[in-house]
Image (cartoon, rainbow, N blue to C red; front, side):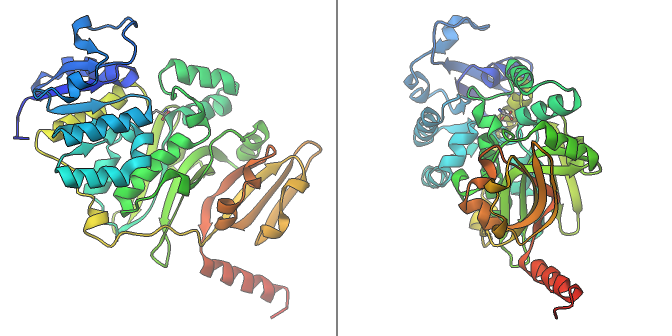
Amino acid sequence: MEAHKQLTIGLFGFGVVGEGLYKILQHTPSLKASIKKVCIKNKGKKRDAPAELFTTDRNELLSDPDINVIVEVINESEPAFQIVTTALRNGKSVVSASKKMLAEHLPELLRLEQETGGSLLYEASACASIPVVRNLEEYYDNDLLHSMKAILNGSTNFILTKMFEEKLDFHEALLMAQQLGFAESDPKLDVEGYDAVNKWTILLTHAYGILTHPEKLVFTGIQNIQAGDSLVAREKNYDIKLVGQAKKLLNGKVAAFVLPQFIRHDDHLAFVKNEYNGVVIESGFADKQFFYGKGAGSFPTASAVLSDLSALRYQYKYEYKKLYHHIPHELTNDFYVKAYLSFDDWKYIPREKFEWIEEWHAESQRKYLVGVLPFNELRESNWWRENNTSLILSPEPIIEDIEIRKLKKKSLELAGIM
Ligand code: HSE
């Protein structure tokens, strides 16, 4: 696409994000971008735009030679994949916000991009308004990127804020998140961590050159967190957040997961409330950096789509530098995590799997412990998310093998055994 060329857009989806983009484009004439046609599923719905703009025939957009950009912001993942791949094959640039589709199909999409020479941008797919994809891609060399941790899902962060700070109950808070247009049409995707792990999969590619599938990452959501856990958090001066974490270990491999975590009040992520998202990056020399912004909602998400459109005007495409120009990093499960668990009965907890248990406490209804587990145990078993058991990681949860050996040696010395 030539620089400053007029962008003629075919838009798929006129929901929260699509309508937001339509409105934003009416206020940004300098972008020289206009929507020629909008493809929707249900023609009957009343929409705040001229009727002649809409069609239900996707080929009217995909085969129109005037349309040089397809913006795809629909809910369903498989139709989104069909639209994006057809558009790339038809020589069009593509902007997508379908995080599930992207996370599940990145390897195929990358191959197709290379084959066709097209550009597929998706800044809106992770952390909505925060420009994190392009920053990870362009700014951070993966040798220097030590770790990143992030709040990636606006709805769960909104629910946790409303429940623990404003004392709403879970269903009330979820309903508000839905009414405000933050939640997925199936809110299980938010609440059970699927949306966050999809976003984490995308960010791992741009941060470390890791191409994986969301199902290969350990994750859960906020579904098992109980009122009692929030009391424990308050006693310890922590917040509870759903956090994506990735850390380069001493052996050069990367530990990555999405799990609930206790966050200290002086942690940058403690500042992230309601539908906001935040990303803390630790890199060599620069030390800590904090990205903060709205992670859900119509205009914040559409603003990232707009920025991708603007980037297309100067032929921008992701180079996937960490994947193609560096030696990509590998994921590892060979490390340990320190975690708090609350549960109904000791019979649900395989105590022999813990390296050690450093605190425990039993009340008539609920029991609590803090202990260190091999991460593989979380990967290979499900007891920690079944039977009403709630797992919340400690503030600095990742412990490397070498540290475990040192700590064990010290405790044996203290016991007078060595
Ligand atoms: N349901 C998503 C969230 C929308 O709550 O973060 C933005 O991706």
